[in-house]
Length: 236
Image (cartoon, rainbow, N blue to C red; front, side, top):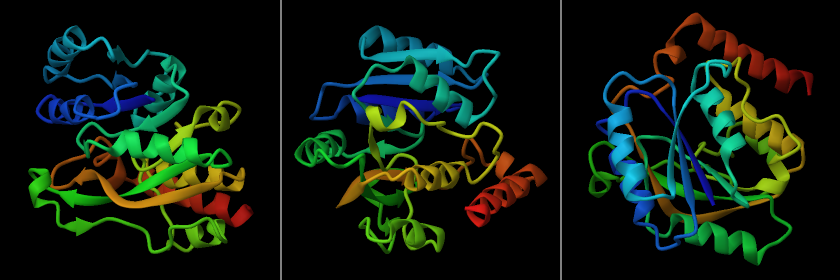
């Protein structure tokens, strides 16, 4: 499994994320952290993690790669070697069975292109994760319609993807400042992605602070991105 994490000024949080990855019962993973230009000591912290565990890799986003989480995600994919791909966020946390349960599901169902899992929202620690963050629909029947109307959705960290499904497709749209995960998942469903949901809480979504896309998500470029996504849906 290749775990790909974009980050920006998360020196105070990314350590917790990496610790949750190191705690996985499933150990056959690599973790690729792509830094979008942090100025808060992230690089020094990451040096400690890469030296302590060779499975963790740290890259600075190349100058010729678009700034932002999408560019970092795409660059991370280009550096990855795993049969399975897990995009994750630099402030969220994994349950210790997150990777293992997801890999087992895909290996047991070879016709699937990805599987996703349930999640909960937390603010400080997993112990205060009480609010579910899950879709209403969790199966692939009429998936594209259910996705468009919002009953089905996939947070970026939720799916574990088969690399073979992703390799010949455009990944994250680096021109978007918002709606990027929605746009990505919409295009994957249009391409015929088959999936299942593991209806267990296996990762935790942090709230209560600025995310990597928070500032970009509140300006006019954000609204333009949302319009661009819905225009794609309309054209389809």
